[in-house]
Amino acid sequence: MIRIASRGAVVALILAGVAWVVLHRDSIGVAQLQSTIDGLGVWAPIAFVGLYAIGTIVAFPGSVLSIAGGALFGPFWGTLWNVSGATLGATLAFLIARTVAGDIVARKAGD
Image (cartoon, rainbow, N blue to C red):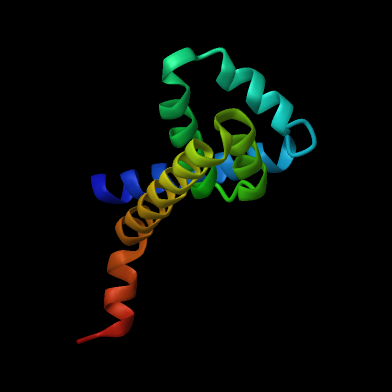
């Protein structure tokens, strides 16, 4: 029962994130991301990678985050942080999908 509740909570959080992105898609841009990340100082790369990972999970357009990464950190560091965030996001999305739907797929696939 607890496992079903935790799965429901994960699905609800992802759906809430997707809904937030859809509702605010016109107000999110590179300039806004840049002003937010710039204020974090030395924590900016870590925050950016985390933001990119969350954006990947909730299907936020990667082009906005990639452009922001290049504008904030330059071509070398921007590429490094973009790839790190995208990879972390893809890994987390895989683990969430495996946790939420793993049993369902295993039952349908059989032995």
